[in-house]
Length: 268
Ligand code: ARG
Image (cartoon, rainbow, N blue to C red):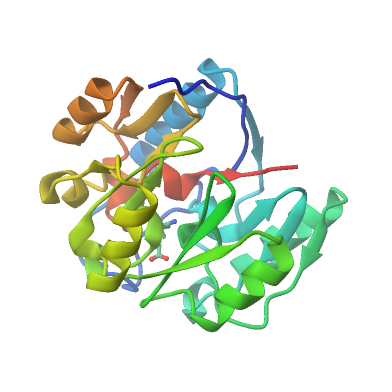
């Protein structure tokens, strides 16, 4: 294990208006209680964790009436300063897309509007030189070709099959340039074979890890920031030579999100 940390630039959105008022994934129960103040303090702890690791965190203003806007990973995909903007599957989140696109165009990024549904880094993850792209629940398969054209990296299509793991970043985490962690059962048999072929030394997560959104983790190549509840994944990462920091995002998990969902990587 020779991975080293590289300083990252992240975009986050404070969960000022976080709420669970609709259900667009199986984690969300609009009838269940949630605590907005606790969500904000858990998110603030995540932000401080990134700052403590030496990363840069930029912020986008939260918009009232968009309770899922905290999940910045869904706001775009950014590679080499090129931004592929997003198009949400669900009307409830549609107005987040222009807000994130404007954040990037206001700062001089080259922004391309998508023709197909894609939910940003929720489903499109850079792993070394290739983009791993999920489909099956949110991001349309047709968007994968568009992603390859716009971001100019080979795109590997991965078929998600379990509605609990509706975004790629709930079932797979990029650890460094050459390795990932994932839950095989979240993928179709063909996609499982592709992942085995590309990442023979991958860390295999347990269903218990995935059930606390343990794979929704953020790695800088050396330190993996992941849900503190993901005990076996934490042990497996440490055994493989990674450092880990556990964070508690229990309130945001009520909307189906964890650390990675809150974090969009800006690769300028
Ligand atoms: N409630 C949000 C949704 O269902 C959660 C998004 C989580 N984001 C992610 N990158 N997995 O769209």
